[in-house]
Length: 578
Image 1 (cartoon, rainbow, N blue to C red):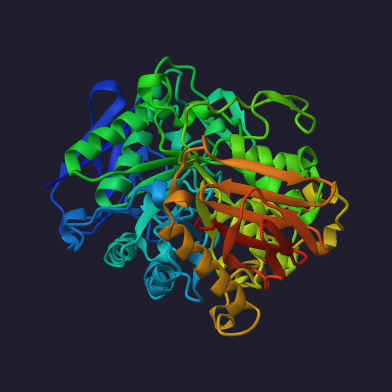
Image 2 (cartoon, one colour):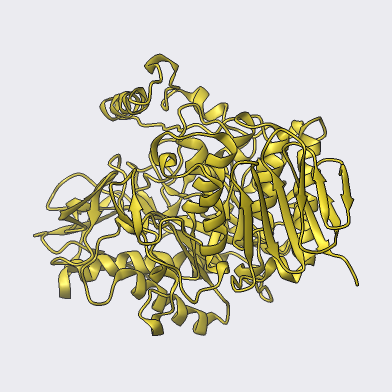
């Protein structure tokens, strides 16, 4: 006997469509409808009919084998045999995160094909794999941030079984797995939630669509919907943590904020399962309260992405000043990010034309994730250019050194470790032609404002935008990809062997820089990272004698406490023994 339940508080009648029959459901408390049915098989297609309308997928559908507009299918989570009973992930604070997109990570673009690349990640030294959203989204290809069936792993990737096999395989390789989830909006294509109940709140809006209803009438069930979704990924798919997209666009005026509620419920699941789970936030407000303990009036997340560090590093390396990079570009900005986490921590942002951020006080730098690239910073460029297409190899090596030797939890974006030549474009597969045309036109208009010719902007709907974004793994043994890979492996090995580099304390960290001569020194005793951003050779004086551990270019020389550096190079030094 299987129990089916759906929340539809305004409905006059609800029917369960299963096996070709429409079975009436019984109205219960708080807008819930129920029906128990004996199924002929463990996996059966079903749908709900609201007030005699067309059959609709279950808002909590565990599987959409025929896409967002098709019927839902039942899943028996107890049928999968896990092999990770003794698995415990390494702490995120000592980890290295690797963000990947299932559809472009391998030629096949499936969960199971990704398993073949896990050996590469373990050899690289990665500890945590972060999957871009895999909840069912429209069509065969997309980034996943317009998902509409939040409980269903995307059918084109391999569905529930493929995802479980991938997570289980990651654990067998010693890799923790994080999942990117989107709770600030849902995509429009295939989004039937409004036909069931007040899932959205008209008082708020996001840049991507209506905001979820977290504090209005009916919000108790909506909050339960999202919290149950988070717990499902951790419990039924054995994910080790979640990354919540754009939490600044999660609007909630409740005394108990949704973010705090989800953090509390994840802690309860930890007690139940005996496993540790990480919650990571993307937060555009530079608000450290997200990663402050609940006991200290914070939201209790483990970490959040540090965009200021990325922007400061990117603009120093590239010289770009468009958009939000207008607020950055000087070594003083990069130095502040390294020392104080945020560049804009309660001061005026010229780009935003307002006060931005809040000071970070008393928190470990391990509460923040640092990166040179991620899906947004690459994919939201007009042509999806990776950093290696904007910089010389020498400059890329400097950027990698500051990420992997810096105070924050490092994160790499797929292919970064070997300087992949493929772009990462924005791509979609909307069957709705009006929506498809709107996406394509909007993309071109957006970048035309920055001086790009509309005809030069790749069409997200064109399948070539997806195909061109796939990693070319055949590049690894060839120059310069092999050189970049060796550099990343060396930096990761150094970080993993050095307590100083894994220590998130900012108390002993100091930064020196010379804006005119374009050098910067990051001191993390007993190590120093010395960067020459200029193209000319430099001689920089140190306060004490040091010896080189790792250098991106052949060292010109060390004379006592003076270091001669090649142009566009970085060297990691260690305090010389007395």
